[in-house]
Image (cartoon, rainbow, N blue to C red; front, side, top):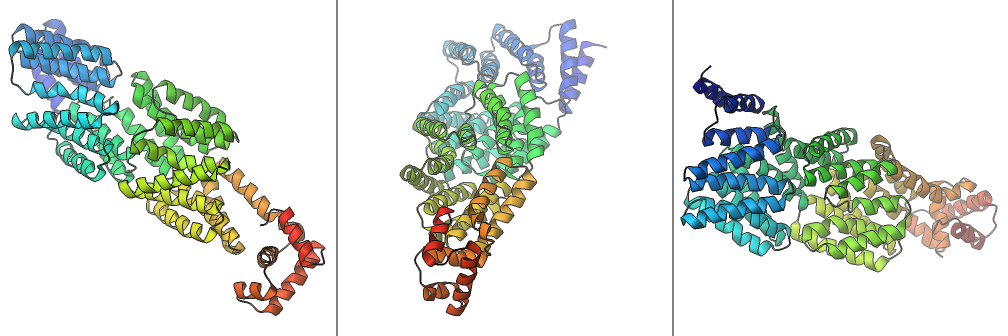
Length: 545
């Protein structure tokens, strides 16, 4: 076979997106006779797409040198950019910076006015975005997008628009930022950009949607990414990120076994490729499922892995401490995390857990403050997930403050949000709180119904920690069963203990005073007491108030 035939077959493999086959053919041709720089670019891309990152970096470097030796500064710089970007995404900022510096030097020496000037703006803008300077990052992304538009370069234009959206979200301009994300995804799904660009943008957009709790968008783009990966069987990068995203969505929808399978596969793939950040995200999803299942030892180790790979293990780790009964430790961890979190998405992710932990710690003022801040953020970001989380936090605080009626309204709003999002676990947790609110309002039958519905969901999911907590609540509420009180008799006893007269109790329950007197006689007989005072003492002794 001639060199021309081999390259022609490699081109055909590339057209079919058979990356492994293309890599093998190009690599074989390269061994026979050194490839031209254009074919080296194709070989570097194929190596990257099948997960051969070390080989890919070496080949990009060869292509860079080959173009530079021919005096083609622009193409040499483009190779340096792709090499630098992949090094940056793999967690090697120093090597990445070295290649970017070389690229700038080449352009400066040649006084080039070219599209590569815009490409070299991108890595620095990414660092600014993640180091807490979104305003400056936005300016750099905006400049890059303008250069891309001037030179009609779809990849650079898409990167610039992506960065605009990410920076605007960080700046609190969520609606405007999301509009740019939707715009850039049109370019991706219409296949107007290169494959390398498409993969990066898919993952970046999904991550941005998850940061602002826009789970409907995240779910839609994750499905698109899944299909995109499935159309390229040899594809290695992005597939692990796709699995991590799918694990989070499956967990939300209550498919915990499937979510665990996806998370474990993502951990294996991403750990092998040393993809630090995304490996951490995959371990976090694994830890969350283990925590919810009550597998605390396994969850502890998975949270440690999360941290080792550079992903924050919070709020999950704080919630693990709470589930373990280590309330002071949980409070310390969540306070520290909130002190460090500055941007809206980061604080939003922590505040719901803060409310739960501080209520457990008996610190109602701090819980109230966290719930109020969460309400403000929910109003600003206006996504169903955050609205549900905020309403749940507000309802829990109102319930703890003794305002069961107001709590009931907020908790019903939260339940509706979780139902709309098809999030059974979160909906069940809210039903527990609704049950407690019903109990406080004297509706024991309603409380039992809510608790029973939550218990069924927890059992179906395997949420053992929540089942244990629910049984403890039921035992507390069931203390009156020592006297075999009915639900209605328990209602009457609570109202008696609150100091109400028979007439007031009859009016509250819309029955006759004669019925109330009959209930009292039954209560006295069952509890072996002879007075309202003794019945009240029983109610207090058994935490029925």
